[in-house]
Image (cartoon, rainbow over all chains, first blue to last red; front, side, top):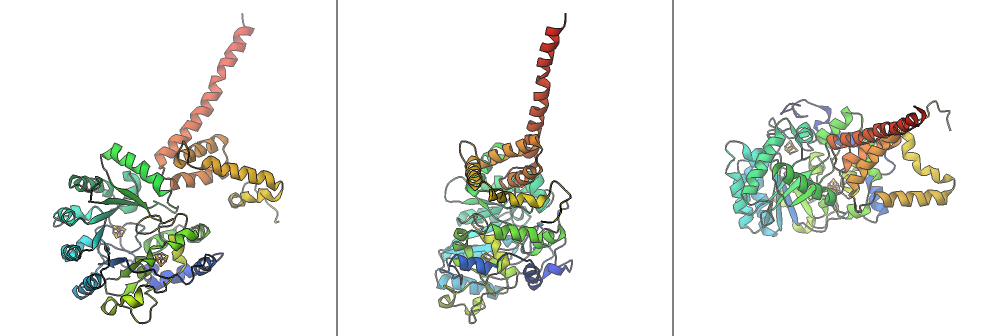
Length: 347
Length: 113
Ligand code: SF4
Ligand code: SF4
């Protein structure tokens, strides 16, 4: 259980590229395709309902190398969103008054302009969400970030797979849990997670090849355990299904469980979850400005299908708001059971 | 149906529902009841799952151990909690044997001088 592992890209692994991952997923024999499942629930084509959330992936650099990471992020990744793309994202946000900016990565803090993005998006009146791995804000040179986030009332969505070190460190690297608790104490001391305006939500995903449990019940259990064991408080717990993409797909292949896992997801297809998938109200932007229906499609090199608007530079809300969404077998990860999204379960 | 060489096959677990081929009314009653038992009530579904895991070990049912190991993890339990549940099963099994030793003592006392 070492702290940092080589990314798939660094290892030149077979599944490092999005196309190779899609080809791998396509080889799994399922009883029906995702599109057949959508059709059986009257949802084909899957259409967006508007752009309420602009999610920008500011780069793949991260101070961790979690074993399930769908981004294949890590310290050895070089991708960083350039200035021009950032400006185009912020101008899209302002022009169309998109209510929410969701900043993801990698560890978004590591982007050199992270502070400016937060400030300008908040100035523009957007609700800002920061997807935080908890350990990055403890790094030298980043100690000002928590107070900045608090001053702009940025919502923090922080990853913590489990309320114990063993499970968390198995997935995220040795020592990550202890640092995460330190970061949570820091955020609590700033007022985060205490029931006021400073929202602190935790994200749990299974440490293994099983599905997440009932979000409401788990939240009650977690609140009790986090307070009892560590004196930590938070607002909501989001349960997220591990997506069969990138490093988790590689892990499934290594364990020879890809077929079983995909079948499990497909068998747990829930039409109510399908109706609420996050791509319907989200637009995702890659570090290079390419537009995607979600961060998962981004990692699979599956851009928006709209033939006209493919990048944030010429993005037109008219063409994007009600676009047809590009789907594939990985989408069963969003529709299994109570569903899964960046905001937890959906059904 | 191919000839089978093992009494237990993990693929049979997923075929549990086929029991409804005979006496379907009884199967329906059972599965409805089963679903109701495991729904959230005075106990959470996580607690019920741990009880099921413990009982599965007391009964040494490989189907139920398979199903409830997975289910307990999915319900948010961890290896410590699951192992403690198995120890509860073990303690009750062992204790229930041992406590019958009192019956043995009663017999011995009544037979002895
Ligand atoms: S899951 Fe998040 S914290 Fe972990 S390596 Fe990926 S981007 Fe970094
Ligand atoms: S994987 Fe992306 S496109 Fe597919 S259902 Fe989930 S959010 Fe939508």
